[in-house]
Image (cartoon, rainbow, N blue to C red):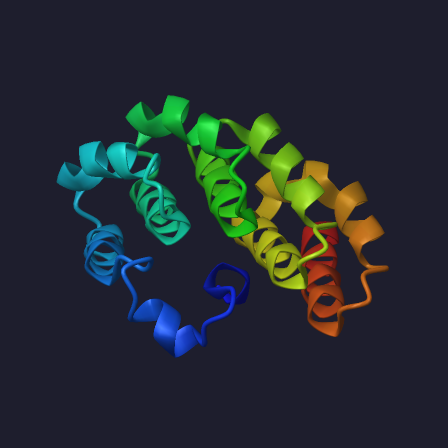
Amino acid sequence: MLDWAKQQTLYEFVHSDDYPLGRIVETACMATDRNPEHLGEFVKRLSDKHPVVRYWAATGCLVLAPKSKAAIPELKKRLKDDVGDVRVTTAEALCKLGETKIGLSVLSAELADENTKVALHAANSLECLGNAAKPALKALEAAKENSDHYVQRAVDYTVEKLKA
């Protein structure tokens, strides 16, 4: 968000017309109420111009998995999103929907993202996937060299869990 705010404070940014707070909150609420009737709206909002709306739409698809299979084509488009957290959430959702190979490929790549928050998100997503994440062990091992302490700890935990 700091990058998006540009020359404004975060407070000014989230209170500006550039930050669609109403649509973001609405999408987040839909994503967390686990109602499959929202799936059509999630599919639409995966293409929203605002990345936070896309993130919550992807989260909604993740929460609804395996009932969100109809979203797979649109989710695959989001794997190339310009925002790392959207890519990570989308990849995790695809893994939960049976598209494990492509999802793990993206999550493995995101472990090396220069934004350590994105790398941490990817590590946490892999941990949430449990044994389905075993094909990503090599990428997890490589991510142990990450200079960010939080990423290292998350990766260590996930590697230990997957090797148990």
